[in-house]
Image 1 (cartoon, one colour):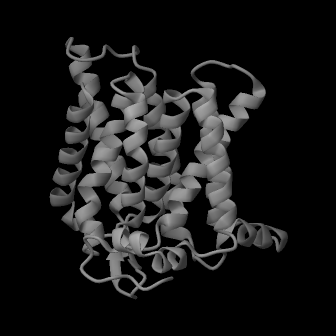
Image 2 (cartoon, one colour):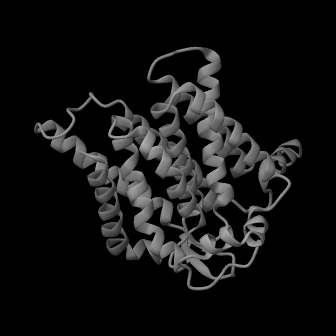
Image 3 (cartoon, rainbow, N blue to C red):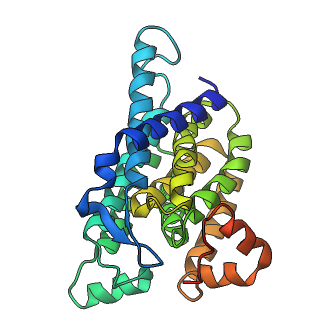
Length: 284
């Protein structure tokens, strides 16, 4: 399966689920208020995770009958699937049970000092655990490299959450980040494994922009984590080191400055952020 087909299959799978999942979209338990106070189903991430499962199930079936990769030959596929489900589950817990009162890393640490474990802290710690499992599977190199690669994936997932503050923002940012990564990965097994996730994200973008659904922490977590997995499995050590530096800088910056306010003040970023929306978003 080449990259274009993998993207298309992911997109088609999620479009089918959007049409067939109308009952889920109306579920009261998944309704949340967005930045304008509208009640919207927070199911974008659930649809992406489900679409990836559909795609990987079909890949397994065609592999068994001799079409595409035979089962067990492409390690990147189960690792990407592990990241999708692991980070997706942690994001879903935050979407369903989170209160949003304690924001940012410092907010979660402050809550812990008060004897409270927030869903956000659970997401951060659990995400680090999932990332460690993912990077350790291809084969042990050094302890420092394993920790560094796991940190990269966890920080990428957290950055996805930090960007998910307005319709379409996290998906558009993920797609922009994916373009150079797709070039770097080429037609490798890693590139083919990541492509359906990004295709599924592209498939829910219209509903996200029109405020018919929200991506939620489930989806933002998954997109960031999968891009991180792509960097770890598909690029060299020097590139991964630079990406870690950038991710650390952006995650730390988010503790002091609002990305939404920065975007609002920079015309090219504001234009791209509002592109495709029914109404421009106010700075949050």
